[in-house]
Structure formats: structure tokens, C-alpha cells
Length: 194
Image (cartoon, rainbow, N blue to C red):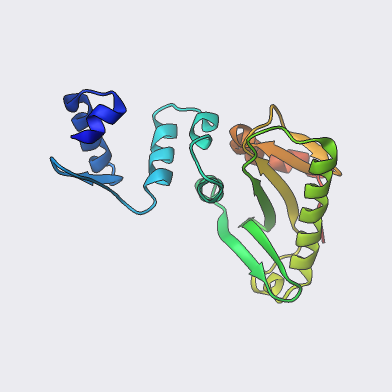
């Protein structure tokens, strides 16, 4: 099997891994071929987290689209109703992830940065997200989702800690679950757009 030689793993070790992945509905294999299921990278990422990998390690192998899916999955596991790639027609805008729970609405801009950004660039990204949230609240879609207010959030791949720019939280992916758990206690520090 060519994959064994490419991976540097012995055939038997690789076979055990593939049997495990097949048991988790991530892949199907026979002696000559491996077929990965739709969404396999995301499923494997979630499995890696369950097995003890850090969110940071898992996020590094994801594309920007996978990253949005990954953030959505975290939101779903935290009991949010999630809408991805919400396109507004009038006025035109797109929200990467809109998540709603218990009357709280979060508009998340997913930034798959591979390097640190300067303060000016981050400020522009924050302002753009605030404008998208304002457009969302003016759009017909806000009535459809029964939005009373929306909290703009930026989730990044790389950053050391949660910080705020114009009261908008910039949250590294490895701190995102904790951020969601502590969100209610931080509402007085966060921009809420009505």
C-alpha cells in the first residue's frame, strides 16, 4: 500500500489506524484503496480533540472553509443554533457564522490567519464586522431569525489570548470554548449591536 510508505508507518500500524477511522465513519478502506467520507477532515478533527489533541494543533491542518465548519461545530456542541455563510441581499453582506442561543445572537467572523496582524489591520477587520452586523439587523433576515441584538466576534487561528478592539472580542480558537462558557459574565465589556 503506497500510503504506508508515504506516511512512514508500517503496514500493520496503518491498517489499525484505518480500521479505527472506519469504525468512526471517517473512512472506508480495503486492501488497495482508502475512501474518505464527506466531511472527513472535520470529523477527524473532532475525533482528534476527543482523543486529547489541542484545538490549536487541530486547527493548523484546516483550510479556511474547514475552519468555519470547525467553529460552527464548536457552537453546535455548545447548544447554539448555527447558520453558516449567511448572505444578506438588502443590504448586501455575508456573515461567516450566525449562532443563536437563549436570545443571544453571535455574528462570528472566522479569520484563518497564519501570522500575527498589525493593530491597523485588526481595527479594519473589526470595523468591517461591526458594519456587517449593523446590516444584518437592518436586513429582512433579522426578522426571520428573530434577532433583537447581535454580538460581533472575531475568531482567529493564531493569537495568544482574548483581547478586545472597540469592545469586539478577538478570540483565538484554542480559547473559544472557554470564551463561550464565560460570555454571559463579560457582556458589560462587549459591544452589543441593537
